[in-house]
Length: 539
Ligand code: CA
Image (cartoon, rainbow, N blue to C red):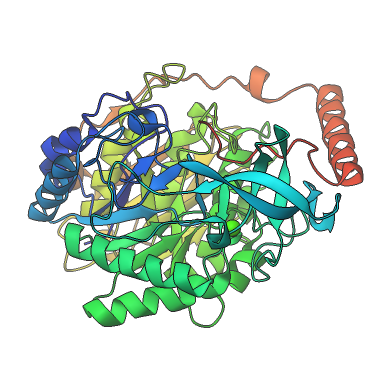
């Protein structure tokens, strides 16, 4: 069966402590809808206690069990509820991937006097002060947990640096004396992008490495998860996961599927990070930006290049394709929200094709009521069903028109009634004749997403598909349409696509382009943003 991952949360879920219970109740429903793996949010206590989304990590051993940071439970519930959710998902046949955040720590219990040097926020290799004493929030004693599970206490020498001096109340990035930023990190931003936020963990410092390995063993034994989603890997020493993952895999004798978040639009950077060893897959960030661009470029994105310089185009076996996540949704720092009118097409591009391991976003599947009341993507359950049951067999691509692209799947002998045809546009509507396989000759095919008439497969094994301006059409054999579990989406669109609003007057377009180039030039001149707001900081 085609695998589909679900990102099992969005940023602004209610902090009601009920999420693990919700996922427990929904486990079978996820499986029935073709979800084969779910990426759960960080399960350990963050500095904001019961409100923390999970990325402000305080104590990796507190999965909602100890009274720390003002709460026993996390935003999502208690440890017992977390374990129950994993059990229910496993029972339903869904793999569980845990979100692993090892780059930084936040919410220290106490300060230490440390010798440090402030560095420029736009170039972390450039000192802007002498080495001098600062008061750093770097003591992690975990008084609420004590020595349960681990007696390891964290102090300044477990970190490279911090972003605050309590003595002078000064915000700035401080590198501790005797420490160096890791070399094998992203260097395209800020000189050296090891430092992201909070206390930057020196993950290759042997006592820290050993402790993180002990924690990984404890976590796997305690929770029995199947793999990991690895946070912020471009801010961590590349050697860390090259050592940490094989050690765990060997000890547990398991595959431990992993997908890393390396946030860069450059496929070359992603491929360089994967290197020859390939201990993980990566999210296809370049493809996300292509989908975003297609949705917001007034029809000017060249759709023939949608998969050019993407990870799924260059290394499909290590690409996790996605449309949206908790960082790209509105209100978040990497906001690049694929516009609603293009969402169904974007999901067709990741769900109905041969290549890539697609990840569906919780906020798109269920909507985001706490975030500007963004609705669910109405076509998504049907697209997921089409992937699960019918998106099989040889693929024929028609990525041959800048405004109108399509592809077909022939179906195969293992999956009854399989085969489909897809046509989509980011501008005006159109038609395309596409080969669906000689075996389908004479069949009636029905448009199950879109507003087009049925059509018949010719003696040449081809059908003529059509789609309306700014829309998606998906065709399947008529007998397939009859057995669909989800409702066919024959619309009148929810989100009207209006050429007048999506295609600005030529002058206006030229003005927007000029403004964009000007902004890029200014950014280049300034080096980078002078206020180093961490890309994820919310708390
Ligand atoms: Ca780091």
